[in-house]
Image (cartoon, rainbow, N blue to C red; front, top):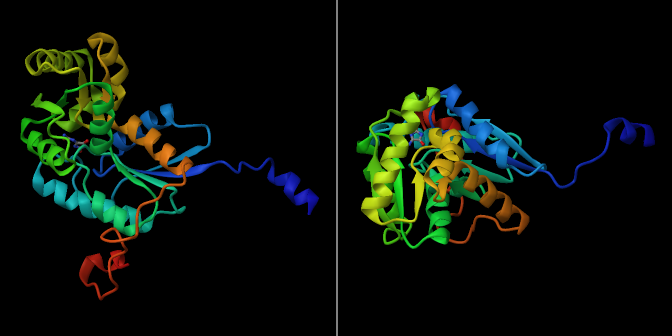
Length: 257
Ligand code: 2AL
């Protein structure tokens, strides 16, 4: 027995499994998000980065968001190993409530995490996001989370999500300019980056802007670690209880509880 345990090497009792879901199906973006998450994760945090098996390669419309939410639900159902925490890494927080019903692990959406972090750092923040048409999604979430009074403006740059995968200086400069304009016009104290694909740009933008720049991916990872360390889990009392058992049909049968 001793030989077996010795061969297994030293045990690491303090590790946690963090399921990091990119709700879109861009493998390059999943990798970039995973890298951003690993850069801030504690040594004992194992990041399992996944994406749905179906759906759009980026999420910048209501229709895409709806399908992506089902993809998030799918990935929570399929999760292996069993996650200690889940992060949903798209700024629309698609499938957040569904994921919380499906697991008792804490589930953190990057928009929700970023808004809360920003509210600790200034009286009012601005959001700089991708396509202008996605601004409404951030605005709906701010109302849903009760944080609309802390946000002084949501600004689109009209940069498509997938262009962030190969962001050069011209793109960074456009986001920087939008952020500067937002800070001045909104009289805000911090910038929230409105897309998971902006995570790799956070350090550069912080340095250039000289105000707190909040990337939801890194904040969500640290919040997930904190909740796990405190032994706090998603409530199963009330509406986050598991969905009631019933028959499911068609392609969604595999998502049955
Ligand atoms: C996003 C995001 O974070 N991932 C994605 O596909 N679209 N956000 C956005 N505002 O477009």
